[in-house]
Image 1 (cartoon, one colour):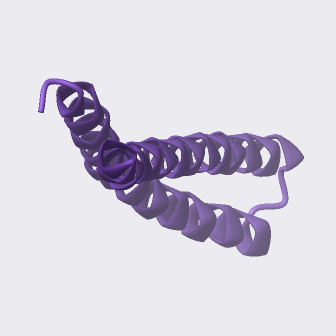
Image 2 (tube, helix red, strand yellow):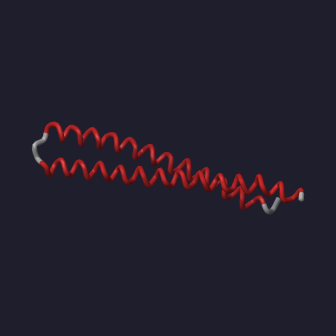
Image 3 (cartoon, rainbow, N blue to C red):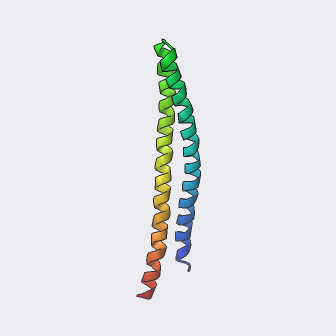
Length: 96
């Protein structure tokens, strides 16, 4: 049982990472949607290129943040899967 404690810790950290980073991914997704609407409004209505470049930069910031949060969600899920795999294979090692 003492061998399983680090694996349960890895699983719980992985699940916690998926929840936390998943939440912030949804926050960034909402901000990206708002930035995209702002960008499209400026593209349709404003003749100034500086305003368009500024809106595009703001949109790209949210895209990069969303990508990074998504990567952390996937890495946390992999961490949880590795811990679960370790628990599944450790019971087989005890039998042999």
